[in-house]
Image (cartoon, rainbow, N blue to C red; front, side, top):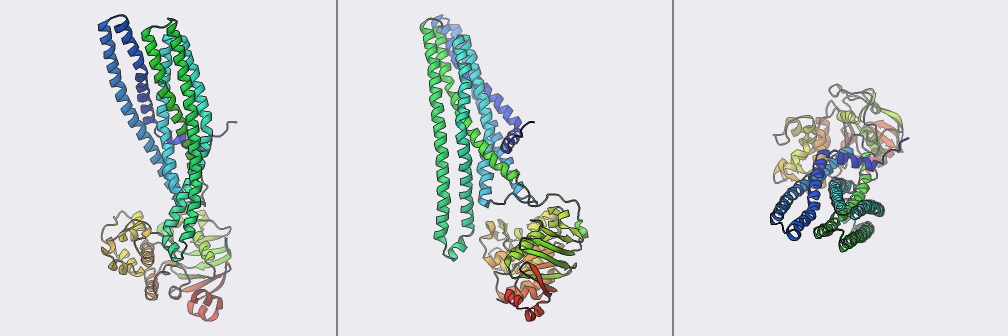
Length: 576
């Protein structure tokens, strides 16, 4: 039975194979360039033989003209070969980055598990670049091989001994170079892994810089980064030592081989077996093959690093999804009523949760443990499937639907949702742009205006220099915490999903704004199913009823005022 190819090798073949046209073109032109380079010493030897030894001036001029034409040809072939190689390398890297981003953003998720965002960024940049560089390495390999073959044939015409020496010695050198690249491949994989970890930690610390300063944890954060950075440095130095050792040994072997070729050629000339022009050609060819052999040392390095990076990319691309990508059933968006049913839901800390939410109902969910809220949101957003029990939307289990279908019908707006680079209006209309062709820069529609008013984003816009067209930096860091929260809520409301699940949308605003937001959500979402997962008394007070989750189970149901008076655990959860 044929052994399956390693995932990293498959990534390499797909990346390079996708650029087959440029690789073939670059290889053909590169082979022409190296052929021309190898012919230069031969033509010089012929010119010497005709002009110096035979005294044939017209013959000398003829071979000089041929030499000039060869120089012009090899110059142009090198230029266009390099262009094709660079195009193949950068295009392959681009396609890998696109595939990685697509996998990370895939509805089924799973690729981000166990990896910091900075680590994924490193894989999509540095690793993709190294794999793309393999396309150039293959072009150079074909060109170098052509140069060595032409050199060997030319030497065979001069002397069978010299030709056979090159033909037999070159494969041996290549095989030794391949063996020497193995330690580099292993250490390069470790180097990239440590570098990705350092990038991930750095991005994590920068994102939480305000929090770190607020709690006075800068020193601990610096110490953490110093540790991972030192690990990355150590791995980089080990990889550099492996690369230097490989290059040094290959250089010694190559130099010894060239010296052997020159020595044999010199002895043949001393015995009179070859003429003056042939001696010049032999020495020139011996010096020329230093280039192709040195290029093979570089090629082995690139292939070793490319294989290591391809393995890391394959781990992301082949990561199992958190949920199945496709569902057996379909849910027509236009016909979604919004009936939610939870039966015996068990997921993480949740234990046998039963809950019925009628279409158009606004229900609050208060929890005594934040982990219960997190688990509920993950199940409703189809980021994970229940360990037991079911979640049904209009009588259809979410596990029978594709993640895209679930999220088109039910929007889960999490508490820590990020904003994107653009304007305030761009962020508010981000979800609308997915379903409607209207550009975000057109005047806000009535729905968007209502969403901004309900969330208090209109007040945010009035306080900004350019209103809704004020630029927002990455992750919304140019706005305050309360401003970011209101813009994120406006985005969720503007999406106008049949079912909306909102998690703690007003933790960073004052009490007056919180009350306004509560009333705004009630008014904007009137007649559509809304689930408010929050411990905010103001938000819970506007719901039709409240469900209390305690120790992973539903322990009380009723309106907010009644639960405040009757349940001590409820009062503890929402009033303290």
